[in-house]
Length: 201
Image 1 (spheres, rainbow, N blue to C red):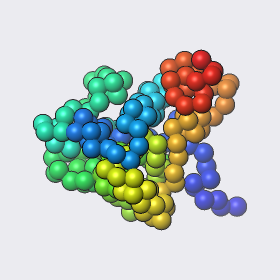
Image 2 (cartoon, rainbow, N blue to C red):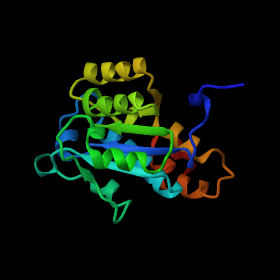
Image 3 (cartoon, one colour):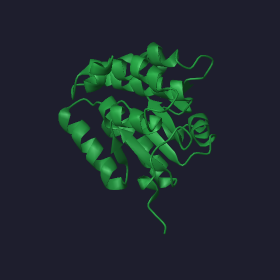
Image 4 (cartoon, helix red, strand yellow):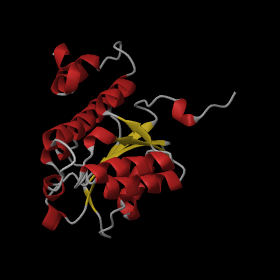
């Protein structure tokens, strides 16, 4: 019996992570939530991906004026290019190198997060939906200039078919169970630095 692909859990073999515009100017403009919390969520997702060897794509817009990608994330992937979009589009996937990097692993599930929610995050997610990918929006790693901009940016994505997910759920889904050989590293380097799971540290 055929099932909706979204019912298939995310794994370290069927998904990638795309992080868009985590740059100093972009985080300064966030007023929809706690900037420290948002930045930590993005870092924890990236750290988990690095531990589990999940492909990650990093994209920036106008780094000359907006600043470089958050260094604590970029340094998790030494030698990997951070794609400064040639076309300064709000949609990261309009940049050929960024889009080719996302397609290269050949995985059908794309987890996306970005700044800001209603623009670069939403437009990039919608692009992937149009191209037939199953898209998951990492909503607690996102923020926008106002509470409403964040709220309705998420609503727009949900209406288009993006599946919402939060960082602890994402990491747990990737890990799958506590028998995973990387579970101890995920507890000490990811879970213990974020949210309710800090009690495990």
